[in-house]
Image 1 (cartoon, helix red, strand yellow):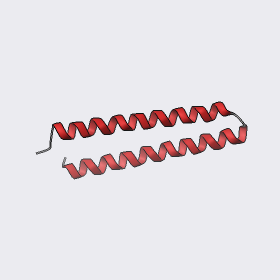
Image 2 (image 1 turned 90 degrees about the horizontal axis):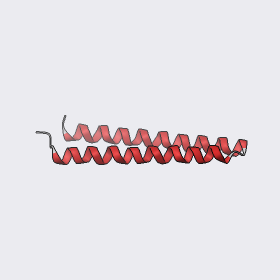
Image 3 (image 1 turned 45 degrees about the horizontal axis):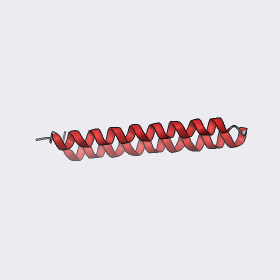
Length: 72
């Protein structure tokens, strides 16, 4: 795999995860507002934080692998 393909895949994965986190946050917020249930809102925030932490971990590991093992 070339570096440009790896970068495109990483960018696609990043955008997909951020959109999923945004949709979960908005859905949880709307559900909590309609039901007046702030436990649902706090759970949606926790899920979004976990997704963002996992995304950060994947990005740093992928970039570390790309730097330490360049593709010839």
